[in-house]
Amino acid sequence: MKLAFPAAPQVTIPVAGGEGAVPVRRIWCVGRNYAEHAREMGHDPDREPPFFFSKPADAIVANGTAIPYPPGTKDLHHEIELVVVLGKGGTDIKVADALGHVFGYGVGLDMTRRDLQGQAKKMGRPWEMGKGFDQSAPCSAIQPATTIGHPAKGAIWVKVNGQTKQTGDLNQQIWKVEETISILSSLVALAPGDIIYNGTPAGVGAVVKGDKLDGHIDGVGDLSVSYR
Figure 1 (tube, one colour):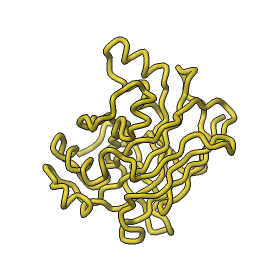
Figure 2 (spheres, helix red, strand yellow; figure 1 turned 45 degrees about the vertical axis):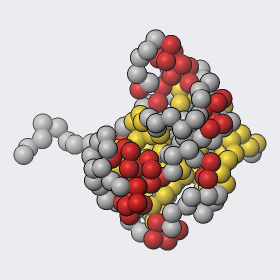
Figure 3 (tube, one colour; figure 1 turned 45 degrees about the horizontal axis):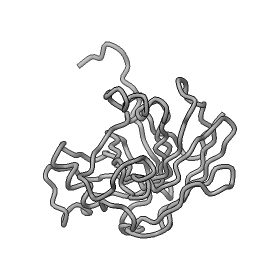
């Protein structure tokens, strides 16, 4: 079929070691998946069912990028997260089978226009403009699960200008990766190239122009971006 105008280029994330790239289909994010972060946001973390929100595929930002400070906000926040990349899709995936659908893992930042998110919450409106804006999903190269396995524990942290702001451990996730995949697949049909940002530990905070962010997850990798 002839297109009325050229299609947007395929968004990709490089695979670590120069072994090609992952084509990004959709980005799903898990809210309040660490108890202390849930508390700092004013919520009870007692294993309430997980909820999800999305970002557009082209929100992905490559490692090492100098990102323009986003418009419409005076309170941009960092949220360091484990990124899960699916290499196999499905619906109603069993927890016991879920890790078999994972291609690999990365280090990501779920950047948030907190003032817009907060305003939306107060008015009972969707969060989209607080979460799903341009360049809101920095991500490192993806480490294949065949290389690193499936990390279930290990330090996760982010530094701003060399000062540690968020720190935690993957074993503090309320909903583990396999549980998240299973529940999400009961709500939507998952497919190869779907990306899941799997929640952030406590310590989220503001980012201003000139800040440099360095994120890390043990056994997964490192991510560095800055704001201009």
